[in-house]
Each structure stands twice: as C-alpha cells, then as structure tokens.
Amino acid sequence: MFALAEQLQRDTVLLGDFSLCSLLLMNDAQYPWFILVPRREDVSELFQLDADDQLQLWTEATSLAEILKDTFAADKMNVATLGNMVSQLHMHVIVRRKGDPAWPAPVWGQHPARPYTAEDIQTIREKLKLVLPDDFRFAGESA
Image (cartoon, rainbow, N blue to C red; front, top):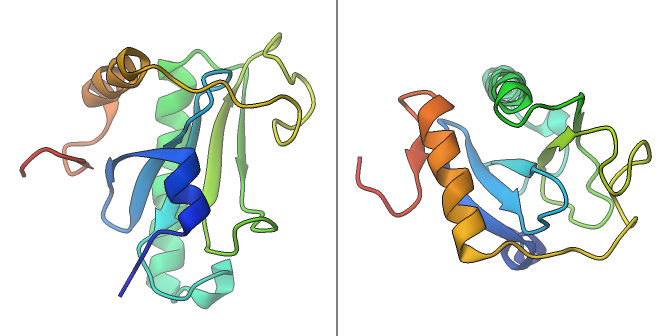
C-alpha cells in the first residue's frame, strides 16, 4: 500500500491528486515550490516505474510546470528528482524568480524555510482551482 514518506508529510501540505501523482506544496513561502509524488509503493527511482507510469509522471510534471510558470509569473522553472534526503520518488517543480531569496542558486539549503499561513495556503489553492485540469482532485473535496 502506498504511503507518503514521513519527511514529506512533515514538510509539505497535500493539495490533491492527479491520476498518478499526489501534489504537495512545500511549506516554504519563499518560493512557490511544488512536489509530485507517484502513488506507487516502494519506488525510489524513475526507472522503477513502468513505461506507462513514466510517461504519466512526465506528462503531469510538464503540464504542471507550464501552468505554474504562467500562474506564478516564473522567470525559470526548476524541475528535478534528487532523493538524497527522501528516497521515495518525488519530483520538485519550483517556480523561480530573479530576486527570490536563493536566486540564481538552487533553493536547497540556502535559507531556513518560512512556513505559509493558513490564508496563504488557501490563496494558492484558489489560484490553482482556476488553472489545474478538471480531473485534478483537491484534498478534502468530494469528487
């Protein structure tokens, strides 16, 4: 049975689900930083997904990156899988802007996280409701 890694549970807010991946918001208000996690058990590497899931992950990641670039006025989108700290396969999709606190360096380890307020999270959810595809299921809402 699929279970989200403990560190991801601690560091993120669950926004909802695409057909393959759960969409998480990193709880760091310095950057619009999203994480896709394929809901597959015991997967730590891209090549461990079957071909259909690999294609679906890439489809969800590229679609999300395009939507976020427009929605959050990105100068650059950072899309990466690392897994050095959390082995569960997950893909970071991070909106970068010239002048953000870490620009132009990677966001990892640059500054302590600044948590979102409940109102900030709700604002992000409302923005995403306007732009995510109809088949996206927001957490806490019935289908």
